[in-house]
Length: 496
View (cartoon, rainbow, N blue to C red):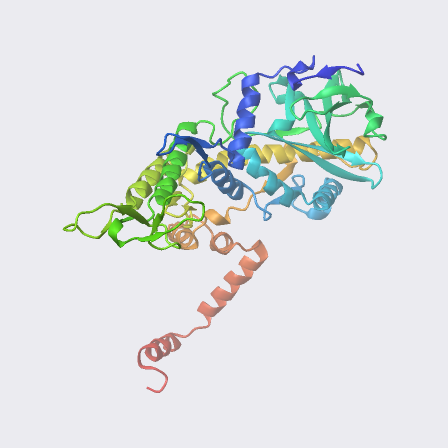
């Protein structure tokens, strides 16, 4: 196959992706970056001009909001069996290995970063690989425009290809190297095939060249036995791809909100243009202007003040005002109201609680109040959490299976049921509301006091039991006369 030339990724005989899906993903990246074409307009003299298009970049803002709600570094990931005694945990070696691998790769922090573009563009792929030099498991990340499915099954994407691009400067020109990494099954054997392409044009994949030209230690084919699932793990936002129902790829959060986003951006752009055009303009009588001779022999020029651009000369009769302010007020309230109305529509389309976004004339702000557990945002967030939980569990199993196949791990491989992913829900929990809720449950006698203390104050079992014991001792050893004395001191003070 050496010498094969590919113009686009779809020219490869193994890859067949709907071009509309590829264009949608590229458009999502452009909007996520805030890259829009310039606005063309005609000035007063009928000359065609261009200016930058001003946007609020709601794609970035919404994806950043959801990624922060779904996952943070407080998430606790553990592997254990049914036994409550940690000493008898069958999967202790697996738990220790994953904790070390995640710590080595700084997984939680990197995952938080990559969730942002995943929500914006609809996909993220991670695959583990064994580093022969360090003897550690490393993670390779691929965004939505760097992963292409080859075959799908009822459990998801079974085969796929990951793309990575390397740029080198040779002779003052950019040279683009594209590595295609195919993940396929040959019956029960997992096959990884690598192909390298070279191009002088950024928009083309290029001509296939030997791997040794850029990766001298990389094998063209690697076969692995003993795997039960693909090494790569694909994550997409919750929901169905209604734009292309037959595609296994996910949609970005705002792919169904394009008209609303355009309306928000157009309103913001018009508002900024009105601010720019709304600078003060004052007409002055030409009789008030000074006359200055020019050095190039052209007719004399009348000036008012060389450092001021707000004055325009106008012939006026003697009975008119010599100075007339014609500046128009900027419609700030109208634009602010229009943007806020569009933001409400965006909240509805993204299934977020009312008031999540607000515009004050300067920037868009997200709601800072704590969201209750029955809110729309919380339910939407939980849908995405379910997808993230399955993704993390799949990555753990893939990591352990690869480590076992390469001799880095020799313990038991857990199932999804034996992997726990405890997401931090603290942002949604109002302590006052929790106290009232569990207090009522305690009043009706349907929850133990220890459980109330644990849940309201987020304490472990042993500390909650100590608290309850101290509370009971305090109540037991307080005499009725002491209660009366304390009440009196509270009313009259210690001196009385």
